[in-house]
Image 1 (tube, rainbow, N blue to C red):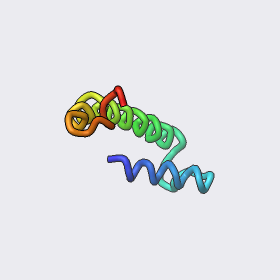
Image 2: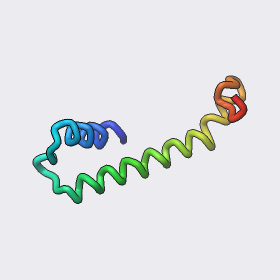
Image 3: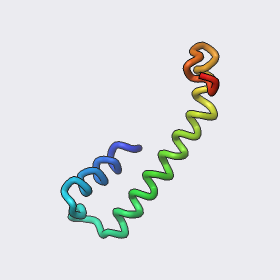
Image 4: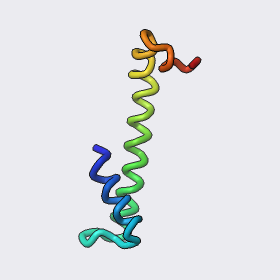
Length: 64
């Protein structure tokens, strides 16, 4: 879910050029989608996964 867009974005920035099959608008949209997907992923972890893990590992509680 994250590796392919991250690699495309990273490589484009490193090379300072667009991927051959992409317009600038498409690259920007990919970056925006990547950020939105990452936010959703991290929010789900914070709300659902970490509280469950925190029952056995205090490091995952908000108090830690």
